[in-house]
Structure formats: structure tokens, C-alpha cells
Amino acid sequence: MDAITSLFAGFETALTPINLLWALVGVTLGTLVGVLPGIGPALTVALLLPVTAKLPPVSAFIMFAGIYYGGMFGGSTTSILLNTPGESSSIITALEGNKMARKGRAAAALATAAIGSFVAGTIGTMLLTFAAPAIAEIAVQIRPEAKFSLIMLAFVTISATFGGSPLRGLISLFFGLCIGLVGTDLQSGQARFTLGRPEMLDGIEFVTVVIGLFAIGETLYVASRLRKDKASVIKLEGNARMTRDDWRRSWKPWLRGTALGFPFGAIPAGGAEIPTFLSYTLEKRLTKHPEEFGKGAIEGVAGPEAANNAAAAGVLVPLLTLGLPTSATAAILLAAFQQYGLQPGPLLFVTSPELVWGLIASLYIGNVMLLALNLPLAPVWAKLLLIPRPFLYAGILVFSTVGVYSLNNSVFDLVLLAIFGVIGYGMRRFDFPVTPAIIGVILGPTAESFFRTALQQSNGDYSTFVRQPLSAFILFIVALSLIVPAVLKARKQPGVS
Image 1 (cartoon, helix red, strand yellow):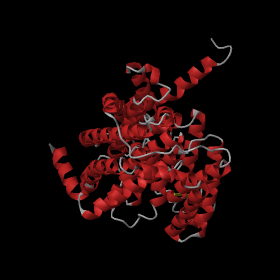
Image 2: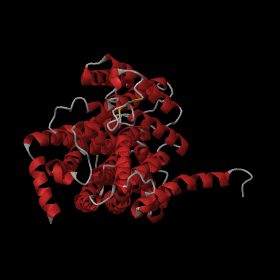
Image 3: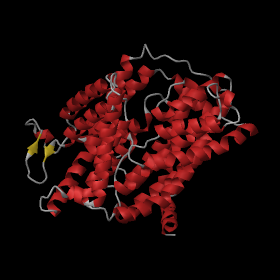
Image 4: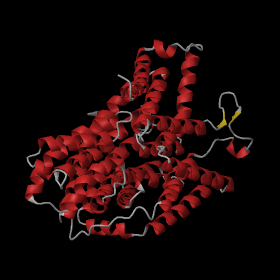
């Protein structure tokens, strides 16, 4: 009942005219960037961090949440009409949705994706409403050793999940941790990794790092491949709509996809990729029309899209209750919290209940807005795919530069931006995932803080990390996460039995 009472208070916050306006701005902008290939909600939120620094925190996060959910809605348009997944979680949608579009059923594919996203997003937000406070109450009692171990688990599993190689993921994480250590050590007062530059004594602005790696790196990468990546856009005639038979075949996949997506989103490195593939496999086994799979089965769009959006709601559970981001967008949202001097975690529900519950309530409102925007305006969103990429990414480059310069009016920040942009391009070029680096930058100082607190409480006894039961169990899982993949890879080598 406390959750319901708090949710009603959240609706009082979210339903104020100014916050409704920011919710509308967020979902509209989120749908737009979701439709445009290669941009996505993570990059958009990163670009907006300098712009929103002076907004009230509640309004800013309501807009960010709208961008996050809107990006998930809009991503299906790109996958279906252009056969270009903007995110890895949209690969399955492109597989079946584009086949439907080529058969003249683009409207049905877009409709089942939009309505499935609404159903999954709403159910996922309901689960978030009741799960988050319960987890927050338990999380308050977690000791520093276990919190440090949880961050280690997030580091290892996220590094192994993003990208094709766990080793590349760990290298990316190590790079991010090194960047996070730059600045003055708060305990000893010593400068670390500043290279003698006074501008770096306070550390490197996270916004500079994330915009450099994401925005500038993506811009350079796309510019290098413009002549290679050419695809035709399928024209959409009329609004997104479904027949009675489409409804009959879609509602069960929506529910099954939701049931698969939310738990995976809520666990460290669960992400949306695994549940979308599982949903597709499940629907392929349960369908009464197996001959359509691979040729444009509507179940193959409905289930994975629901799983994708349910996972997006699940990602907010560890972010709000434990301060652990499990996706690129969640990592940047964590940075946005820190920009306002807030630390997500169990105490956030006590110290900033208006913000937390206003944010959760806005997710319900945003889902309704997104459904209203996506179904009748599908032809409008489809036309955005015709915008020439050189114009699009040139605008991103200008916006990125202005945004970073506005932080401190510093030319040195622009030099750092260019350096991180080149590094970001190199990471994409050689298949090093960017997300582990971003999470390393954000969570590195937090992990160091918990590590030091645990040692101070145990008088410098390092064994406290294995003597505390929860910490020992989590570290055991971390060890397995590192050892098992290496052993399995070794067994696959030629000559190994």
C-alpha cells in the first residue's frame, strides 16, 4: 500500500503542466532519435546533459525517461522499414519486421511493435513500482564489502556481455577505470594521472568523456562508412494498424515477451539482447504458423519488441535501488544523477521521494503519449529516415562541441573532446565496446569508495571481503564469470579434448 500511496504522490508531481510538457518533449525526441539510425537514447541523453544542468531535477529526469522509452519505441521503425537495427536488441525485429514490410505489411509490423511496446512498458513499470521499494529496503542493509563486490560483478558481466570478445570488454573497462581515477585523491589530497595539468585536478568531466566516445566517435565512424552502408527505405502507406487476426496472434507474444524481458533487464548485464532472442525462439516453437518464420511472422516482431521494452523497465530497478547501471543509457542516467549531486541507491527513496516517484509515474504517462504518437504519426516518423546522414551527423558534431564548451568555457575541454572522439572511433573500428568504458568512468570512484570504507571498518583486514557471506558469494560468481568462459574457449581449441 505504501507503494501505491507514493505512486499517487508521484502522479501529482508528474501531472503538473510543466512536467507534462517535459514528458512530451522527451517522448517526442526519444521517438525521433530512435527512428534515426545510429543515434539512440544513450547518445541523446549524453548530448543533453550540459543543456539540462540548470533544469529542476524532476523535470530533467522525466524528460530523460521519455527519451529512454521513446528510443525503444522508435527503434522498431528503423528495423522494420530500413532493415537497420539501431540497437543490438532490435536485430530480431529487423529479421521478421523487414520481411513483413517487403510483403506490404509494414503497417501491421509497426503497429504490433508499438502496441507491444506499450503493453510491455506498462506492465514493466508496474513491476518496477512494487519491486523497487522492496529491493531498496533490503539494499539499505548491505555492507560496504558486498556493495564493492556487486560493482565488481557488474564490471565483469557487463564487460563480457557487450561486444564480441570478453577480453576487449575488460580492456575497455580498464580504460574507463583509469579515466575515472584522474584528479585529486579525496583521502590523501594527492594528484593522480593529471600529467601536471591544473585543469585535470578536479578530474575529467564525465560529459566530455561520454560525448567524445559516443557522439564524436560515432560521427567519425559513420563518416568513414557512408559509401559502404547504403540501404533502401520501404515506403509506408497509411497509419500503423492491425487486423483482427493480427491481434489474435500478437497478444500472447506480448505477454510472454514481457515475462522474459523484465527479469533480464533487472539483473547486472542481463540487457535486452538475450530476452529478445529467447522470445523469438519461444514464439517460433509455440506458433501455429511455423512456415512464416523467416519470411515475416508477426509473432517474431510482437514477442521480441515486448521483451525489449520490458527489459528497459527492468534496467531501472538496479539503477534506482542499487545505483548499478546495466546498459549504456542507464550509465548516462547515473551520470545525470551525479550531475545534480544525487546518488541512486536505497537512500534515494528516502532523500528524494518526489524525484523517484515522479519519475516512475511519468513512465506510465510517457507510455500513453508514445502510443498516441506512434500509431497515427507512423508515416511522419518514417519520412525521417530520408534525412541525409551527412547533415544529421554534422549537426551532432556541432551540438556536441557547443555543449562541451559551455560546461567550463574551456578550450582544454575541446582538446579532450577531440582526443576521446578519436579513441571512440578507434574502439568502434576495432570492435571494442564503449559501454564498459563509460561504466568504468562512473562506477570506478564509487567502487574505490566502498573498498576503502570496508577496509577502514575492518582495520585494514583484506579478508573481510571473503569473510562476509554475501560479499564472498558475489565474488565467487565473479570468479566463475571469468574462469568458465576461458575454460570453455580452451576446450574448443583444436587438439583439446
